[in-house]
Length: 437
Image 1 (cartoon, helix red, strand yellow):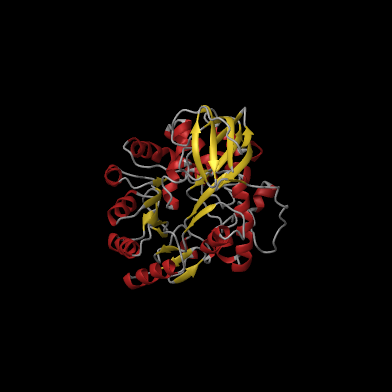
Image 2 (tube, rainbow, N blue to C red; image 1 turned 90 degrees about the vertical axis):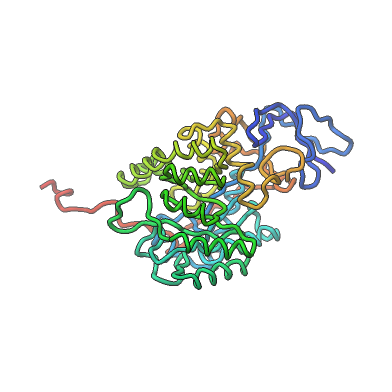
């Protein structure tokens, strides 16, 4: 039996103008999408007059296993593997209810990403289509967690590697356990840092070792890059995708354009902190730092986009500033506001362009014949206002693999003792602040 979604506003996810039309689904596949499709005998006809039919959102940078930590300390020292798996399964359902039908979970705590992906595929847990990395590879310089990263071993999402043999061993171990990607935290923060963004914590030869080892076994490599040198070295080493790609210079841009390596700016976290940080007690200096990262990087990302570099939407959902199921539309809003994307281009960046991160380029993320039927029915027109996708009440139906999902409200979640922590305060309580003397 086929399903005919009829009389809706069709947003194809390929950047083309929206049109009034219909979509026919047979099994798990879209077999037709056109302005006029007639019902056939046996069709289940769904009249969507006044609603939008569009591809399911694809979040190309989502941390589904972290469970919204307020700090690295909380994430590294207040999580347990078994409970983490159960909580991640709950959070995957929150993501799905926001209209996100696919995610790229580039790194995870413990080995939960691969396990969650396999549970979803087996029908044990309901959740979005997933591509999963394992533990992010870092050097002893660390990533963005500073002294919380040990000189060797594993902590949280991070696996420390110190030489060629350790790099090869860890890449092969992760591939043995079934990762879809290898992630490298190429840049990090150090005390008394003198350069913008972050510092490069890997050299070119080390990055080339990661890529050669992974590629020999058919697995792509993604890098966290927040400075120009790291972007250039990653492209030269053979990285398949770059997260952030901020603080780019002309030389890095030239290499990026030459090799057309996809980038995922992931501005949502910075934008939320810069725009709304005062509502959650964020440090004013940090707000300004993150505002400048967007401001100083947007024009280079625009140049990359205009030169044909694929630009994907990822939101860093999974932290206290980016809770699951709430901000997956936000990157599109920032692309329009700060990079100058049209709404159609932004939707494309959050749908069809992201298929490549799941290894399904050309198979998901668009409303056209031959694509898998991962679709949304939306109240409102996102080509006029993408923020309609931020209200889950506007996500009327979610189709995954051609099936309309039954998505009743999730049971409310209670607190878990010791699981989430917060600082004593956002500042120091001095005597004179109280007594004014």
